[in-house]
Length: 235
Ligand code: F6R
Picture 1 (cartoon, rainbow, N blue to C red):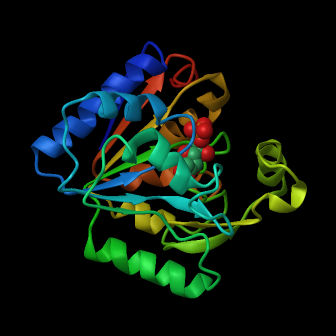
Picture 2 (cartoon, rainbow, N blue to C red):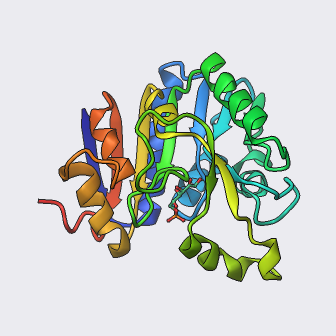
């Protein structure tokens, strides 16, 4: 069951996304699954400016780079502090610990944490290649939290944010597709023409590992927010 909402632009998308969060909280949501990247920023702006109180809630983020401490400006910990947590603290906020060198420990702990705190609403952005979290094409639909080797193109794209090439993370810890699909409700947001092919494949293409987001077609409660450019290849 997928509900698609097309909005004018990213500002309108922020308000539309905020309303989905507000509605979830009114219906008793306790655990919010959060994402980083450029897409959620206007939603976080609306949440920050709102009267909503998260001080009794738990947040659980999708992913984090391996090897970056929470104090590193490119870490997802840091991003979340800047865009949401400093203004709106949660009772408990979890992001994978990128400084834990033991991938097996970290990913098992994180998966157990999600099992103990089932996610009521999971926010997602969409990659141009159809990825969700760090689950690139080819990831198994029943995958759980795992260590991911970043693709050469992702490493190259990230290099501009780092002082030297050696600092660019090679790996990330990410919820799996199976982890994401366990959330009771999913909100996925995409803006811009560069996402139009991925949006069409996610919503109207076959359910296939070639497009990780296509597995959202199997989920009972998905809300999609798009701008017109991202929706432009839908039939
Ligand atoms: C972020 C994440 C990624 C992004 C996706 C879209 O935590 O896991 O899957 O959601 O790469 O990124 P933006 O929003 O920057 O286009």
